[in-house]
Length: 299
Ligand SMILES: [Zn+2]
Image: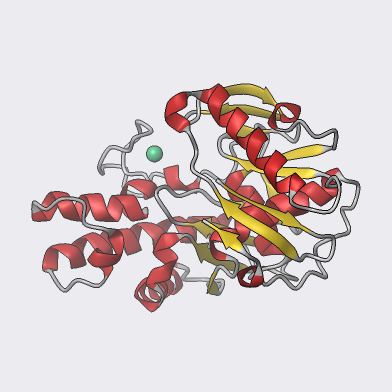
């Protein structure tokens, strides 16, 4: 978990990390968040104006409806804090996308895709400056677009999902399996000249370019912002994906492909924006010049 105390001018007064006590069950995680928020609040001058919280799974502004990996069902936003202040919840990836939209790579760009590639792959579709969650909140699950319908089975049950080929976890897993090694990380695969590594990386690039071409044809984004651990691969990721995306989009220009600007802080900064919205200040954010590295960080 990552949390912070953010002023109305966007100054990150404090930011901290804590481990998530997932093994202790759903209630324990909620209690740990409550304690974390209490601690952050006590570190400032007076009571905070609002709380914003980015959570995984299916979420509405006032309820964490369902999170498979945390065991949550219908947890009210007010359960997450003992403070008597307004609270707004946001979906984790969409909250990161909101921060990239208001403060990061997408500043001033109304329509783009924010795609963090980490253990899994999910996107935030930014439409008219706001993340779009669809009719039921499941919008943006780009990781489960079947890119190779006859391909390998995904943890979700489908076959050939983007995530099965192109997430950082999948790149490491697919190479480890082929090479008969244990726990090779994606960044080692990217840098390797082993033909097996090249093949696995090529599959990842192919899968990504197919999914991004599909997204582009459907939604015509101004740009595509790649983030998460795999985006750290830099040109080794961006160059081949860009080349193939351009090639696939025969009758139209490809949108520019850019790296995310806020890194691992996107979720926390997006949550801060939600917190200020909860406090009745939806105008805050666009003027922030956030330099999170200047904030004291306790790991
Ligand atoms: Zn899937």
